[in-house]
Length: 107
Image (cartoon, rainbow, N blue to C red; front, side, top):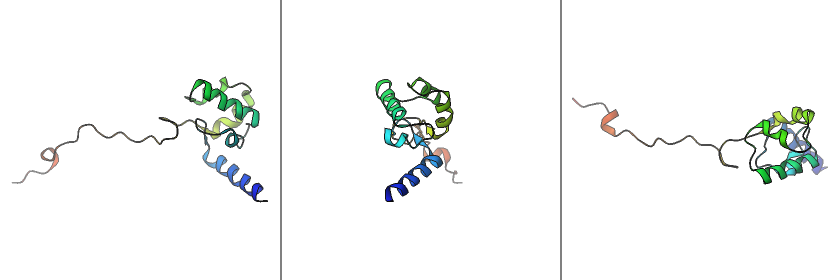
C-alpha cells in the first residue's frame, strides 16, 4: 500500500516538474512516460560514456530510444545548463561603481 502510494506521488511530481536527465538515476527515469527499465539503463550508460546530454536532440543517440519513445518522454526530460546538479546563478559584475559615481552630489 505505501509503495503504491509513493509510486503515485513520484509519478505525479515527474509529470509536473520533469526530470533532470543529466543527474537522474535509472530508477527515476522509469517514471517518465515512454521510458522503461532497459531504456533508462541505456540512457544512464550513454551519459556515463559520452558525458552530459547537451540538448534534447542528443537523446536520439541512445540505443533503444525510437521516435515514439522520444515523442513520449522528451517533454518530461530536462536538460539544465551549467554543472550537473547545480543551479545556474547570475554572474556577479566584475566592476562595481564606486560611490562617487552614483551618489548624488552635495551642494
